[in-house]
Amino acid sequence: MPPIVSFVGYSNSGKTTFLVKLIKVLKQRGYKVGVIKHDGHDFTIDYPGTDTWQHREAGADTVCIASAGKMAVVKQTAQAARLDDLVQYFTDVDMIFTEGFKQELKPQIEVHRFGIEPLGRKANTLAVISEDCLYEGVPHFKPDDVDGIADFVVTTMDVS
Image (cartoon, rainbow, N blue to C red; front, side, top):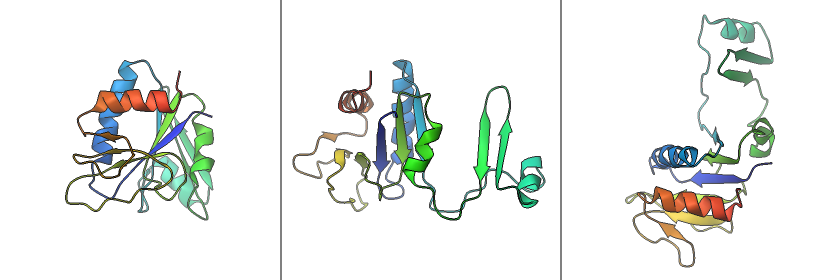
């Protein structure tokens, strides 16, 4: 299984903005990157009227749509999927990043923005991305130090 790092922080802390930059840097370095995004709301991937929507509305428990360049699976679940259940779909990547999943016990990098409450240091906090140093003894990176975090992730997670 590829190594997993969760980028965590409260809403509007800059997680997505930072991850987009980090993914671009790692792709330029030749790495394959997978991302699992946690959504606190009930997201919609297919819309009324589409074939897959009609299949799901008819009672299909799992629907997959595939083309030459991409695929998507919609699976009805009785409860929220756990991160360990989702990673099985990411066998062809060098590393997996998650956005969110702050309650999971995977290694985490906290993304913090001034004016938003920090999450608080946890045993699985690897580093913090913030203008200010939040926790003593935890590696700290500025939000514009994308190369520094890329190096840190590759080294810390032993990605070859």
